[in-house]
Length: 248
Image 1 (cartoon, rainbow, N blue to C red):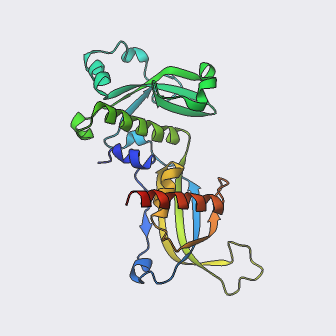
Image 2 (cartoon, rainbow, N blue to C red):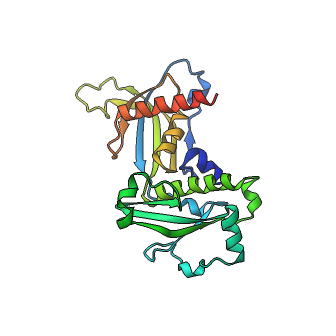
Image 3 (cartoon, rainbow, N blue to C red):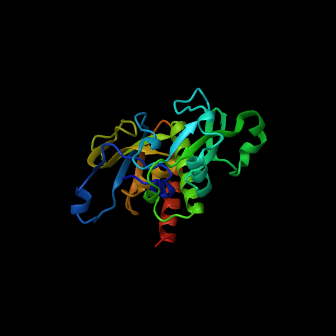
């Protein structure tokens, strides 16, 4: 079962498609650092995190949304919904849209959205409900349930905005006949290191990708359509390594 607590760590975890991991690097003893080619791509087939087993269920009060439900179905809340709101198993959602959208728990800090909230925001834009057995969330306090819900909503926002990705990592070497070829065609693939899809959020994409890259490996070519540079990946890799070091 995929629990929303996974989203707390990853802010973008979802079932991954076509996961392939090379065994070549494992069997050769990691004697030499690898030169890697990385491709990051948009994955339009990524399913909503709300469709995962054991996830929160969001309902929108905007009739243009697929998750629309009339707010009269929820307010004033009946006995069971009132109880869930009281104990953190349901949360009123606020909504902002100006180009991209932002979902948040009602009462959360609006940050940079505050100035435009009166024009593009709704304090009551939807509701988030835990519709499973409450024991599936574990022994959580109301505050922990709120954090879990906020993490889910952050991932849901990324999915709504199309922040859905996949990646490939390949080990490469320079071709002997590389003279006159462009940067990508100068490289010859010698090993398929890893491939994953159905990933929500760039932060989790990096986390998943860097799990397959050893400290001594060098990314020599990056292919993507998002304007991400090798320097961007280098900084993200350093940040990821620092975060791991802080937890060990």
